[in-house]
Amino acid sequence: MKKIPYIMDFDTGTDDAIALICALLNQDTLDIKAITTVAGCVELDKTSTNTLNIVDYLGFDIPVALGAEGPLKKELFVAISHGPSGLGNVIVPPAKRGFYDKDAADTIYHFAKECAGDLHLLACGPLTNLALALLRYPDMNTLIKRITIMGGALVGGNMTQASEFNIWVDPDAAKIVFDAGIPLTMVGLDVTLKTEMPKSVFEKIAVTDNPFAELSTRIIDFMINRNQLSAVSLYGSVELDPAYMHDALAMAALVRPDLITTKKYNIAVELDGENTRGMTVADFNNVMNREPNIDAAVEVDVEGFWEWMLELMANGPGRVSS
Image (cartoon, rainbow, N blue to C red; front, top):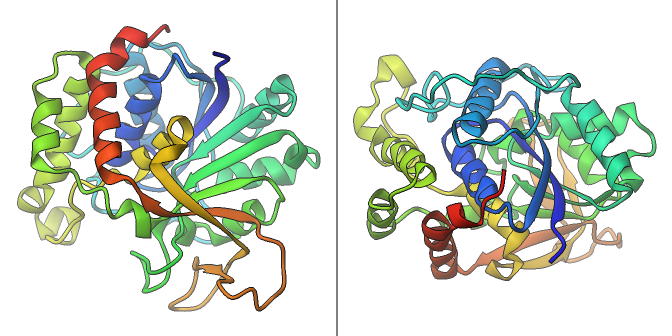
C-alpha cells in the first residue's frame, strides 16, 4: 500500500505528545516528511524541544522545523494544564541533533512542492504556521491535498462559551486556513471531549513493554493525576483537564477515518468579541447560501478508538521503519 505523505504541525504539550507517538507508530501507513512546531500549549522553545526530544528518543530522524513564536496579530496565550515545560513532570532525554534548516512555513511549502499536490497536513495547535505558508506562497493552496485539524467546535468551547483553545489563540491564522479552499477536516472539541481515557485502557498501555508505550504511560499518568498534583501557585488552578486524547483522535482520523462521522458545513472563524473570538461558526441552516468548506466531525466511535490505540501501542513498534 502506498504511504500517505504527511507533515505534522504540533504545539507539543501532553496530549500532542500522545498524538505524535501514535503518528510515529504508523510508519507503515504514513510517510512523515517533516514535523513542524508552533507556540500554543507552551512557548515555542518548549514545544519545539519536546517535539525534537520525543522524535529522537524514539529513534527517528524525521526533520523537525521551528515555527511561529506567536499568533499573527494577537499576543500569545499559553495553557496551564500541561505544566511549565509542556510535558508536566515527564523528562525526555535531550536530542542529539538539531532542528531543520528551514522554518516551518518554508518546510511545508518545500515538501508540498516535492509531493506535487499529494501532501496532507495534520495540525494539532494554533494554525499560525499554515497561515504563514499560505501568505508567503500564493500557490500554496493548490499544493495541499487535505488538512486535518484538532481545533474548533460546532458547539461550545474551552476558552470562552463558544471558542476552543487552538482557534482562540490565533483566530486570524485560522480564518486564513479555513478560507483557503483546501479540503479541511475539523476534529473539534465537542467530539474530542468524548475521549477521556478510561482507567482500563491506561492500565493496558502501562503494562505494554516497549519505549512508545512506556513514554505514553508516563505522560498519561501525569494527565490523569494533574488535578491532584497541581497547586495554585504552580498552575493557577486546581481544576485541570482529565486525560482527554484530543489530538490523538485527530491523528487517528488520518489512518482510520471510519472512527469519526463528519458532516459538511460552511464554517466561518470569528476574529473578535469577548465571548466569540475564535468561534467556528457553522451555518447549520444554510442561511448564507454558501458552499460547505469544512468536513466537521460530529461523532466518534469511542470504543473503536480505544481498540485502535491499544493495538497501536502493542503492535505498532513491529511495523515501524525509521
